[in-house]
Length: 386
Image 1 (tube, rainbow, N blue to C red):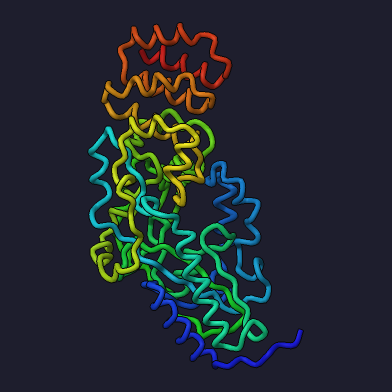
Image 2: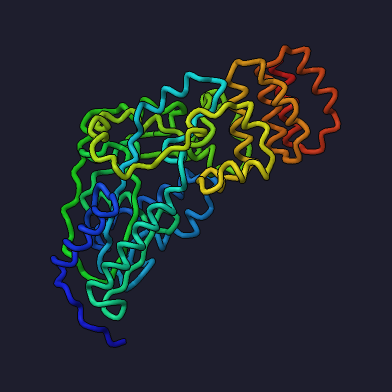
């Protein structure tokens, strides 16, 4: 295919693109060559072989495309990585003390960042392509998290920071609070130097994990990660991990919040995500009453909506069980009649933690005709615990 002339030299095109990114509020930017992460593919395949991806079936299904950007788009010549600071006003772990309210991960307290960042990058690309010769001269694609692109290794290769011991990106200027987006282009832009690891001997993030999801520095077992368990995991939460979740109902920020580099994250927050007040510390009783219609209405435009009511109420009920607040028992008891077995099973566990043994036994007798085998097992365990 014949291509039109490119109106800017690569260095000037890169400078213009970065200027556009700053105007859209991005705090960090850099360019990586598509071949800059040769070890990412083998590491991903090993992680999957160990089963550490849990039931995220899309990981093995897309592993080969994830292994290298060129596998996703053969014409790619550069990957522009952009970072948006979303550092919170306070340590999000303070919300864990309010046991009758839920704790939502910082990134999910407002509107869906996927749409926010994608909109910004589309505007950048529109202006960039027009200035560099139009679609006949330059092609671009935007990616935000959901595409099979390994953003964190690419962000490190582009100089935005480094993958810390918690496997997330760490920046000397923004700490662990960067949301990432990628612009792929067939224009060869000058690459930036890769980020250097500055974790040193620190293991604050590893020690902060409630469920010990890090078998070693720089390795994570998703099956023990509260973010995975509350968002991606489709089944019941493993019994041994439930007490460790506290009131975390969507995601977990503990390893991020523990990072000492966060002391710099307060700089340049103009474009940070705006949290919805109702998601800062939502009462568990209120959340337990959400039917599907009200769940969708409450979390419209929110990433929480993608999890669905069933999994979300599972999380809420685990938090109710951990609350030590017997006043929440009626909310859990009402959900013993929910149409979703996943919700009913979590309600059984919550009641086993809040009610006296005799009351648990009485409820077990009332629900002796429970049709689902998994929920019947929850009742058996509840009676044993009582």
